[in-house]
Image (tube, rainbow, N blue to C red):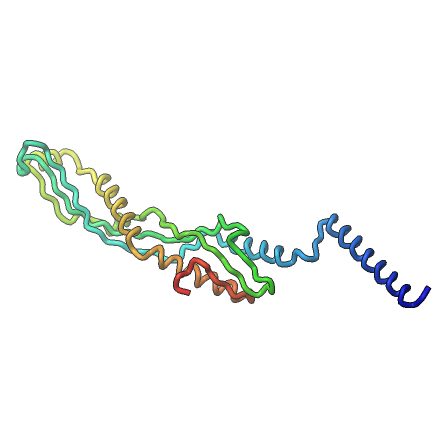
Length: 205
């Protein structure tokens, strides 16, 4: 057998052995080409482990007006108009626990990450009972007499304060600031790990 044919046969044997070895290692759960996917999974788990990022807190002070009228009876006899100053806070956060591998893409060279973040959310308002207070109240004669024997109930005022504060928070820039602060936090996290991160939903980029 000539040298070129001998070398060609050896080359084919090497190729066949390599393919057999590759199939065997895949059957045993090892995939030499899955490094990027594995790294992506590890990165995703690290992000999800951060759970909720409460990145901004808004403080609100609202004047709540509550008016109770008795139909057909003049206000000076029966009725109540209360101005209530409500003070409280609302937390804005981004929940990272629902992220999937579709939300995180690792570049082929393993140096950059594209991360799609969920929309920021708002917590339930936390009314500060020590700072909140009744500012003024106008009462009819009948209501004044009732208040002598029964303390006025403020539960309705606090419920109104919570509802209006939640509306004010929705209309504020809290969510935008939460998204911005979350991106800054994750940029620092990925940077410390040697990755450059981008956010496809970030309109400021």
